[in-house]
Image (cartoon, rainbow, N blue to C red; front, top):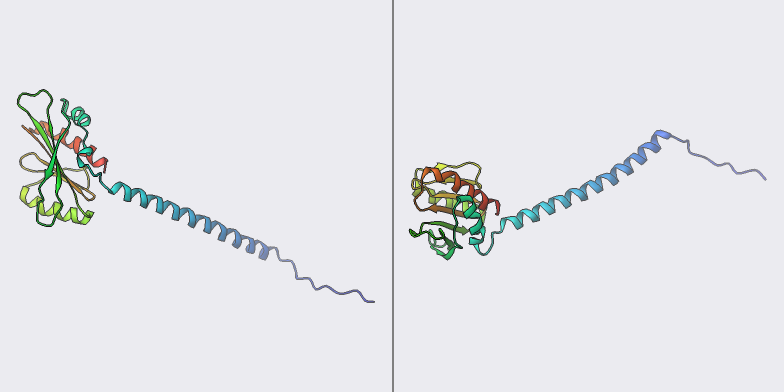
Length: 188
């Protein structure tokens, strides 16, 4: 009986390497894609969570932080509802901080509004700025910021607009108010 003849494919090392390289690259690409999707989802969730302001807008400025920034003790804020700037817009929060043990009752007003979206807030911020002309731009605070002619500091950060006004404002207080605004914007 004759022995069977086996037809053996010729061994090609380059083809084998190419095949394994393709399998390895497909595996690495899949892992990279999974990692990339995880990072995008995580960042998206963090930015979505960071964009939501607290229900109590006055909590964005603790009295202790204000006292430290201005170098004088301030009491906890008296909270009231801030009026709507225009019909069909949100009400805001007025947070009035009185200087502790000050017979004159000097105070700081922190007024904040949370709008439905960043674009709605930006539109209202631009619309309201016309009433406070000429604005003096402030860099490095929120998305946009300016001092009005009376020394009030107006800030836009995401979907929140806020305003800081200090009794007896002087140019010397400008840096202090700017620092307070940075702290508030940093919490949003």
